[in-house]
Length: 235
Image 1 (cartoon, rainbow, N blue to C red):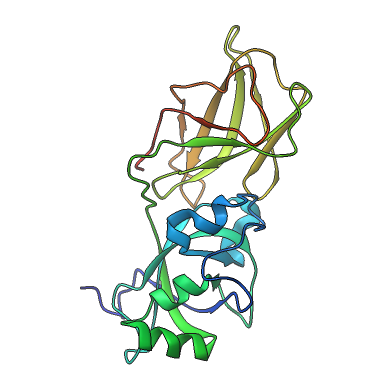
Image 2 (cartoon, rainbow, N blue to C red):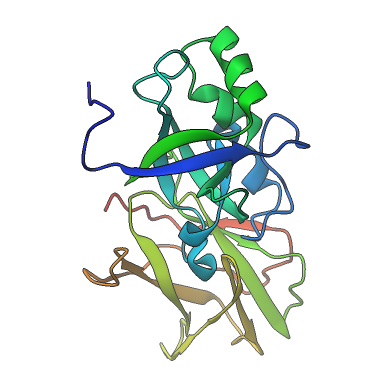
């Protein structure tokens, strides 16, 4: 088991959503909607600097608190779904995730009573067994005039830093805008089935690679619908 002195971890502090339900929020800044409240079993968090203007949305971190009387050695793995900070914290965890750092239920209650605790964290790979990367069409979309979507179930430990939308007939691609959080948008999207290209990068913006999904977004795409892209990453 790793020790709290492990140099791969960064020292920080964490709080939790005091007025939330046990899981996360469905109105988070990343634009995930209800997915942002329930993904990863509800072990989610808002982030301050790690939000990175939305690039950090969907990133996974191992977070463990430092008080050996209450805290387990493994801590909890969380997904970033929102933006926020409190009293110089890097994370505002869901209540479920905050208590998940504890060794047992009694210790979890003690942690929640403290409200803010010293923690250490590191970036880890996300894992969604049996899931492919999935497009969720945003509720603001209006076929054929405006398309906005988020990407769900992104595995690995890299960020999606660019997305291209491609016409499947003539293979002309256009770079999409990140409107906010993890929401990618374009006005006047092409007609016909739409292909995507996603650029994955590490946190330094290096080690870049394009991933091309197997499946397209169908021509008759609709707001609120989800479409399995038939591809997954483990980088």
